[in-house]
Image 1 (cartoon, rainbow over the protein chains, first blue to last red):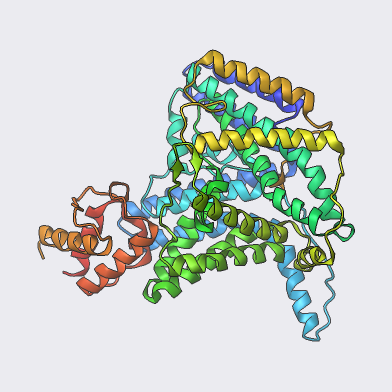
Image 2 (cartoon, chains in turn brown, blue):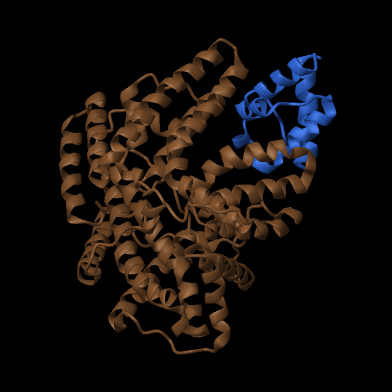
Length: 485
Length: 80
């Protein structure tokens, strides 16, 4: 059930009405949320309901046990149990996402070494949302183990946190210490949350259906038949693909955050205008923030601590392993590993020059124009990201190299797939997105759908945007890219 | 070693590593209170503290500190 489908609208209207009718009854509200979340997830993948339910129960009790060890001042046991619980939490993810891939890879390795292997190819169908709810579970037990929060006593709240329907399919990955306390509050619908929720939802819907979906047709046509094109078309596709990904995934995230607001809940931030980043490290601080934050805390930091005596070399190793983990999180394919390694290598000059964690500032000429120096750095970062995404989206590393190699066969013609209207709609919509991000980045007094503006002005913009969406959205409801991860 | 003495020495290390003479630490100071204190400088601080006090922290210890007070507690315990 996509957020931009009629079925979802109906489902949400019922949930929203029932939820807010339980005025100030916190527990009843949580029951409504939990039931709605399980219904939502059950419609997507019924056979996964027992998996999420059993994992929730197991990790709930493990969390209580970890806390008991901590209270008894048995820190070592608590630490070991937290790590064990994290492994338990990750088991379904490894089974559904990586088991088939690992067996296949080993089989290939053995046959390369001359051994006969019977296994040719088998993959387990990956359930939706598994990468997201398992990370919520793992974060919970590790935070207790690190004494950063207490174990949740109320099972209902915990189960609601794990299965929270706006975020179960593609994030953002909320942290328990920020999310769970919100489930203890009455969450009365106020006008601020309502306006903010609708604003975010409509904006996300707009970037998804008017930019990502329409651009997708064009980009898919080129990457899918790259042998028929030359440097011009492949160059265009590679350069606009990051924008398609951004419009799609930030679109989903904004819709999820917006739905959260309508339910009185603040969901974690996921994007902060990533293409204004002036180096790759900054890009990762602005792109898929909830995932990179998660991996920074639970993969990068422990590795960096382990390797701390090796100075920069240790830091580089921690960064590269962390980014390979980011890559493989997206799926069981060597392309994702390569994508992570590529980004890891891009960090090396930043680590050596001490710029990795340095905050960069944009110089605004006369208060409104980005300085050419900053602009060049942004453009270079964008191109490096775009090149990495060629590997990210390819079926195999070989195909990615072939696609790049095809650029050297000649300029070729410019692809006109999808028709002029399609191109015109996504170009115009993209312009709106760029203007909005530019104004937001520059913290200008005015902006598009800006928070804190007069209600009538926001409503006017919303109505205009909704009319535009209804006229110019594509014919079919398309899946969000990140649902496959 | 007195707790105040540890705090004073740790403050000197912070000022030196983070290159900011104006840093004033208290037991309740957290990473949010010191601009230069991020995930990377955190590791540099740990290495410098370990060297200075001739101690070695474990990963769970490092990951569980919530403020400077808890860091001082571990130093006091380890160097006792």
